[in-house]
Length: 171
Length: 437
Image 1: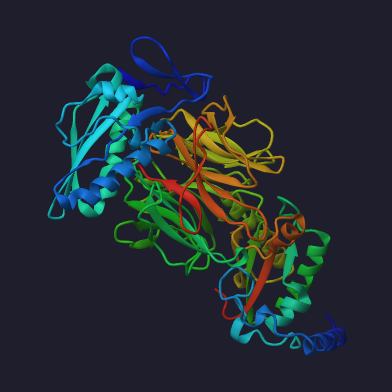
Image 2: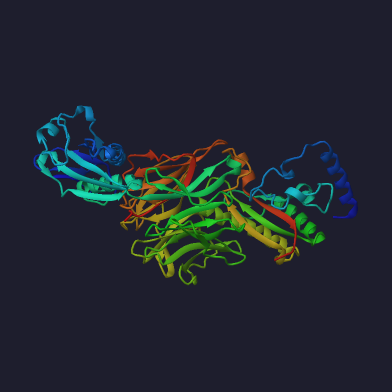
């Protein structure tokens, strides 16, 4: 991303931030698996391009998968290109990639499926130059749904891999 | 002779009572089930302090028997005979007159904290006792176990099979909304009584399994932030991580029948394979190397084989291999997907979860894959566990939608007697203990 386009984005984000109330990234959820492990007290504003909030909201912290698949879609790859650039620009951050599944499967299989999805994201980021030492993966299977309806519209958003960045040492 | 014969003809067919001359028999065939009627006069309290225990123990015995679906209690207001002493002679004609086929009498005595329960079982139509009188003793806090022991004896003498009432279930107790579920391990009696939490809800936990002797539980915990296999002692609640290979995830553990080893899935680089670990030494051995998902392993009762699920064919299917690894043999071939196989304690059947046409089923099949029979159907049924005698399966049923929540259900392997297990709050992932000593 060039400095010019970054500053354009920054303006756009400022406009949004000015008129929205604090969302859950302000520290609503305390538990694991909702893609906010690095936020809470120090998420920063999305207006700061070096902040986790910027990564989450502007770069895009998640990619979605089709049923039973861990193959990255074109949309997912575009998002991950952005994630890889951000991680290259911000080397002090490490990331945990969380793999998730929808509720239409058995528990153990979904843990294994979430592991596949997280791994697909990790491999892509590594292929774009992110050091493996900065990345970890975890699968939550179907245990941490974001959306709670029992319809495809919700399932589609739950079949996800979320890259959670946090400032800290690799290892 | 009073005898409820639970033959498994072919595979699984309902029970019927067959009226005939001579010995009463209940034979399994294609007919309708008629539960065996029994009379259970409230056990005699030997001493005033035992009165309350006598009443409650009698209730639990009756609830165990009727809850099995194989027995029916005759209401006490129909009784003609009165039982005022454990040793008073049995008026068979009075019990026959109300169509009782089995009569259970007993007495309860309390001495200090020690509770003694004795009972007798009678075959009303044979005018004779069925087996000897028996006596059980325990501290009064264990009064429910004494009742379950009596019910197990009655069940065993009439069916010719082992009972399952004096047993426990470990499971995941859940609370909170669907997108913020708090989960913790809990243990309870098989009928939902005596619930006790084993962990707090600070870390996500999955799929606990009892050890073969019932003293330990193995499960998946996210305590470190990553799924790891933990081992917990039920009495002391002491726990330790069993598997902690950096950069990997381990889940879906289950004990070997001798309790010495644990089989589980380990996921590395997105690929989940089966491993075996010696619990004592921690040494582990990889059993599968396919790029597909291999998970949900379960031992045969003799410890020689393992059934598991794999998507190596493209979708989840069931496979059997020897416990040392080797080439797996696929056993499921029906429509849909098959997962979470569990070998029955008798060794003859494998219970599984089947997903087909948007519905989930609990089913059973023979170990060669033949005789598949679906026992349940719902939006989401999964994760079967066997009763100690291999007659009943408990599983998780989850309702759909934003307010959807899981609950525990049980069903007979004939497909009859579907019941919700009474548990306060949402519950999932049951694992049935062996019969307690």
